Image (cartoon, rainbow, N blue to C red; front, top):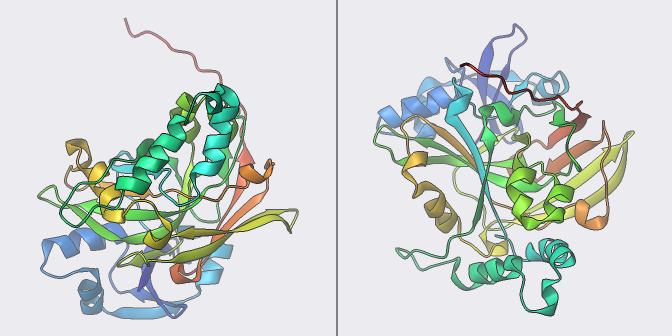
Length: 331
C-alpha cells in the first residue's frame, strides 16, 4: 500500500491509498501525519486504521500531479518539527565521485587514502553488524526542516549564492516519534536530495554548506519495509528533451550499511526522539549527473522513478536572486 496526500478540487486536504496504480480516498483523513498519530494511539498499524476508516472515491493521481495539487506524502502542522537529514557514502560505488573530488583538491592520493575512502571502507567493514550489535557510524548531515521541503511537481529553488544545482536520487525513510519517544517507521519514499556539488568540491569541509538546500520527496509513501533491491532511473529534461539519464540502485543489496544501522546512528541522539516530531532521513546514492559533467540550468526538470514506489518524482529547478542579509541589533 502507498499513500498520497493532496488538495482536492475544492482546496481541502485529502489522503488516498494507492493500490495497483488506483488511488482511492481514505474516508475522514486529511493528513498522513494525523493518521500516523491516530495509529500510534491505538493497537494497530496504519493498514488496520485505514481499513477501519474505509476507502471512498477514486481520484486521478496523474491529474493531481499535473495540476500541482500533490503534497509531499507527509508533513507536520508545524514545519519546524519535521527534520530532514541524511547519510552519505552508504552505497556500493558511492565513494568514487566523492573521492575524485576531494583528491583533486587535497592532493591526498600522494600520501594515502582520502578521508572519503577511509569512511567508505569503514562502512564496508562495519556497516552491516549482526542483529543486536552496533555497527560503524556513517557520514551524517543536517539538510533542513519542513520549510525546506518542496512538493512534488513544484520548482526546487536554487539560491543566488549557489555554485551548482544538482540532483541526488535517493530513498528516504519516513518516521514519527511516538508518545514514549520511540521512533516509528511509516515507510519509504523516493527523494531528490538536491545539493551544491561545486561548493563541496572546493573543500570537503564545505559538505555541510552544500547540503543546506531545498529538497523533494514522494509523491508516494510506500508503507512497510524497503525492498532489498531498488533499481530506478534518474533523468534530467531540458526543453522537453532528456539530456541525461542513468540508473540508480538502492536497497540493502546495494548498500554498505544496513538500514537498521543508519537508523540507530540517527536516532541515538535524544534530540531526535521528541514525541510528535517527523523525520525524513535520506540514505544516500551512488548516482549523480554532476559526476558526468552535467551543469543544470533554470527550468531543467529532474525526474526520479522506480516502479515499486509508484508515481515518479518530478521537480523543475528555479534560480533565485541572491538576497543580502543584514543583521540588525535589538539592543
